[in-house]
View (cartoon, rainbow, N blue to C red):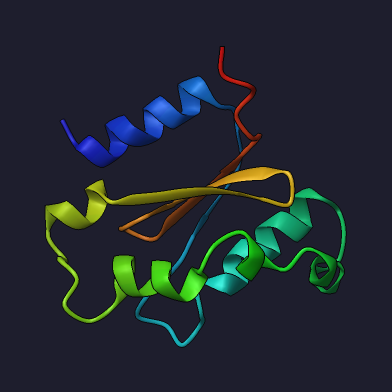
Length: 111
């Protein structure tokens, strides 16, 4: 069984996925753009409105991009197993090594 599919299914079961998008690391687009576009779309607001809540205050997105998609990354099956998750602007964001970006509601308090 594909572990990336298993990991995504675990996320889907434990948290309701609100939006799914795909990042293409081979394109000229930076990783920050699909994340901001998805958050803006879910919040029904323009991307520009997110300037009040800068992404860099939640995570170093350039470091995430280098880790998951930078030179020397493992492009084999290990790429699908890597995931970075963080909270930003009221959403839990999961970025997978294969370019999948999932947005869900943030985790509730731990008991």
